[in-house]
Amino acid sequence: MTTLFGFHEVEDGQHWANAFKDGTGSRREMFASLGITVRTFRDTETPNICGLLMDVEDMDKFQEFMASEDAQKAMSEDLSLIHISEPTRPERIGGGGVGVEK
Image (cartoon, rainbow, N blue to C red; front, side, top):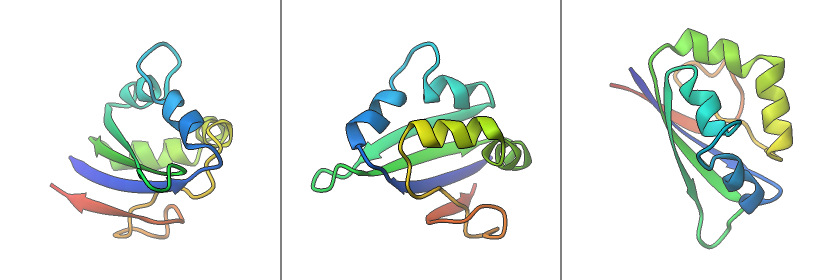
């Protein structure tokens, strides 16, 4: 299991947060279908800075998904400006974030 902490700067923090609310078609459901548990955070002073804490069972599956058209479309819909990454393998996805092995 790998725990990832990622952060995004988004155009509209509330819009981004709404995409992660529980329910059919939510980002939470999308990640759960990959076996990924997600917790979300927003900066109280700069609400367009948003964070994710994710427990990922299969990093290869996660990386494959993040490179997919579906993931790119979701990030575009969520108005993401910066993508999450795992610095231990920065060549796989660009952006900021921290990956911690459990």
